[in-house]
Length: 381
Image 1 (cartoon, rainbow, N blue to C red):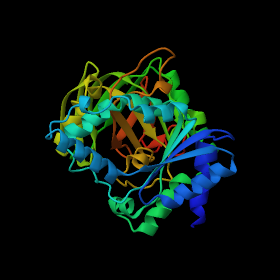
Image 2 (cartoon, helix red, strand yellow):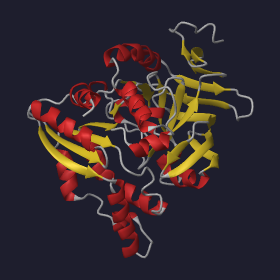
Image 3 (cartoon, helix red, strand yellow):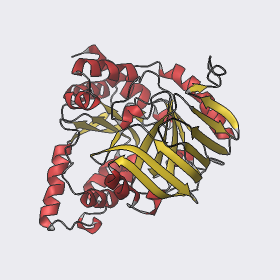
Image 4 (cartoon, one colour):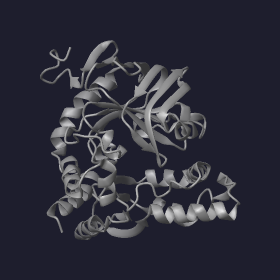
């Protein structure tokens, strides 16, 4: 076993999930992620935790959903699924932590499942999803050949990329990102502007007053649930303006490129995409909350140095900003307040490395990818 696999497992168990002796931990291991699953099980055993292991397979999920389609003659609705499966819900309600190890053999395994079926399944599983998110959950990936292929890399090159992103000095990065968190916590309004030749401009404003930003330093201690991480995010509202997302991504098993959204009164009133527009439309039509923003995220992990068509990595990349339509995270909201609610949470990314600026209450905080506390900020003007 590559020693970096064990290091990955130790970061996941100790830094990210903060597992302690006696904790009940559910571990979902994807296809081709066996090695990391083994290393995580070993680490959990050494720490005296109790482990329940699940097999997380997109191919199995596809088979199930195709079976539902066959049993309903293809006309699938949320009522065709149990809205709160007792066994699965009870498992997560009893768990202290949930570790999801992604991987898989085919990144588009569910591409031939009807979008309406996938949406109905997502709506029906809201109760299970909420129970799972009430645990100390962390999602990560093991480098696999399918992910390397999706990223356009050789497998060995992709493995190096993954470990450069995961095996960071997380305490040092947390200290740096705390500066951005402080700016957002003290601010009332964020404005993002990009002005590029040959692409639609972005000029979008959103309120963040009363919200709490999350210093997403890859640990539940920071209300952060991804490994790797390296972003600061909050829950905006009252969005106005237009935004262009120039980073290609796969949404709902469909390649989507060059998305343009127009916001009025806090919700999307117009949209377009150069590719994958139907998939985007289906996402926005999921429910009323799917047309409102649930997240503003600022990428700060410069160990991620290229786009890989994986939102887990791409949204954390330095010199990027992402906005998510759909569900807002409770960690960003005042106690007792409900944020934007939706069955979806879909991130879209824009490159801010050039011809861009981000303002908070009129003050430029980031210009052309450089933060105001970094060397070269003035030269970036």
